[in-house]
Length: 148
Image 1 (cartoon, rainbow, N blue to C red):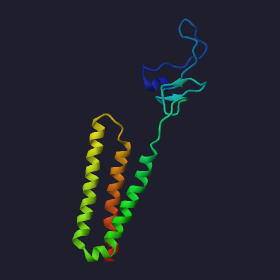
Image 2: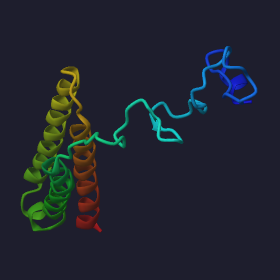
Image 3: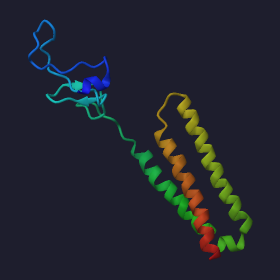
Image 4: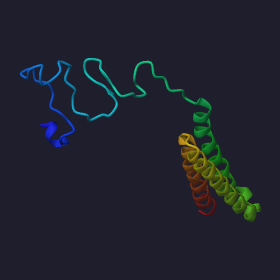
């Protein structure tokens, strides 16, 4: 059934009716649905972050920065665009919004350069998206709050 769908690369599981000349007595392997998984019977296929003995470090500073910095940028820019600063200094308000987008662009370039050096830019990529949405939604909703 499953071996026909996968083509010639896969072999059917050992049924027990075959002789040991044709097949080894190794336990049957299931269909290769997951490239890296713990198979029934405790056999480890490939390596995975859930494999015993494999520990992946978590960067708590990056997690905290990616949670709190976009939130703080949103709050500060929303307040700046919504309240008296926008009324008293309309030009400076929009200059600071553009500065926010320049900061996002700089972080996007850093992310791209990090990716070129074969590093994992996951947190940088998330930060670029989160800051982009924080700046965009803060000036959209702040301006709506200011005018309406």
